[in-house]
Image (cartoon, rainbow over all chains, first blue to last red; front, side, top):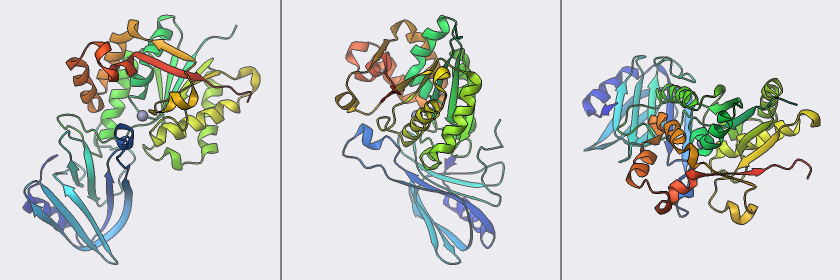
Length: 123
Length: 221
Ligand SMILES: [Zn+2]
């Protein structure tokens, strides 16, 4: 993945607009948060291969963290804290936000084909 | 006499190395075969390597490779059970238990090692531990292996008492470190900690790694 270049990501988001796409949306602070710090809360949300269609999508923000929102036929979908992106070898837009230690905090991914259990691009 | 065989059942690639590598190495030294049944590929891990080299979609492929290398380092067999990380607790326990039971009846182990449900912190640890206990319970008396359960939660000794088994794995330390190091995407934080403070006595974190502790599961009550 590389650091987000807003214009490039916006272009890719536009390419998926109006199509049936599959999304992976996730946010997490890890299963060990309250193990390492008893005052911390474990929170997270995850959906994989939700089939949606968005009229338009937007990447907003500046500096080092961005928000990405998709306007769906019947609702909305967004992710906050996105820092890096990649258009992978299967033409999927992968976006994620990482903390200082490189740990994933949030992910939003868009693909025209369902996400598989295991990535087939790698061996 | 039955042929000794140890089966370790944890949900994530790296649980075997952090949790039981020394114990595993001690069995391998005696020539006892060890099989690792790894529940998931750790697809949902937050660590993407440091510096980052994986992403959410490629992580499982890296972790699968790391798992194979770790099992080579420990000289054990591995079978991947194919569940998805962080979803094990939402599977039907009986179904997972049935799956495990069929594998266990095929391998016919003398000892099974898993997590102590309710005291293993990660929901996958608790869920798989519970299914393993159920699976072993359903094996007929004459073939039922011994079961050791590993607790991780900070409070566990207060609630469960002293563990029945406490292995000081210092003689296998290098082996354990070699196994942990294969988990490149996950272990960088731990490895830098170890290199900063190689002295066991001044590092509580290392103390956890040095003593592998288990409770012997009692099926009679
Ligand atoms: Zn684990």
